[in-house]
Image (tube, rainbow, N blue to C red):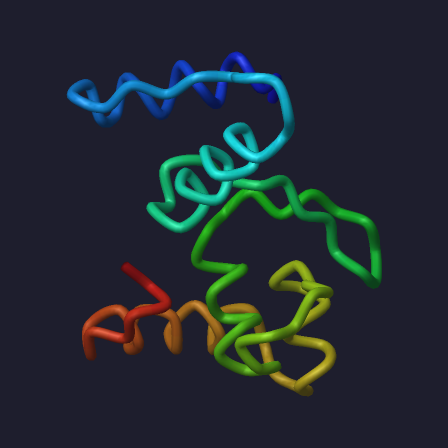
Length: 107
């Protein structure tokens, strides 16, 4: 994603606010941080075991729930299930349970 795309996304999502790409990276970094915090853009992650692209936010969230909120390496659902000695279906069920219980990682 290009910086211009992020600026466009930020201004589209919050039309009353003006964002600039002024000289220096501060403004751009703040926009990126805002977009990530507001979960308006998805950073592309790859599984640290098999390299598979992780495109589902719920898989990132279950990684954070099971491995810790500060984890920087994520696994796809298949590798995560193998790591914990369970099945993908069990993890999918756990994701649904956590969503239903209102876990903030799954909003």
